[in-house]
Amino acid sequence: GVAAVNPGVRLRNRLAPLLPLLSHLRQWVEVGEDEDLHDPGAHQRMYYYTRVPAMSAAEMYRLLRAAWKLAPHVDAPVLLLQSRQDGLLDPEGAEALLQRLRSEHKRLRWLETSGHNALVDVERSLVFDQVHDFIRQVVNRAE
Image (cartoon, rainbow, N blue to C red; front, side, top):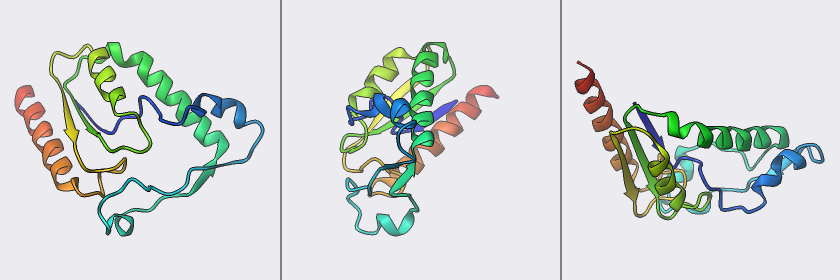
């Protein structure tokens, strides 16, 4: 099975397609801080970089595009959790991904309050519970 939290499908930044080109012109890309988090203690629970190597950012963009192309071949059970308040991704991308998957057992669960890094934000317990339940269901189905 596949459980994905805020899957990178549609980036809000319209310049993202330029990352492969930019990686030849710049060494670093500024990504800033997670400003969409709603839990005041979230930043203490995470470690992140405010800038990344441009080559790495370009490779991540290529990986997202490759995963999109492969999605119609995924027939394993899938759980998608997507934050409506995601500052990095267009939340409607998760809906598009759900429709693209071949799996008969697929579900999209919306997170109403959390930002992009939902694993440390206000709905983290809900995320953990949903993923745990999904794993149990997949294991039980396989037995």
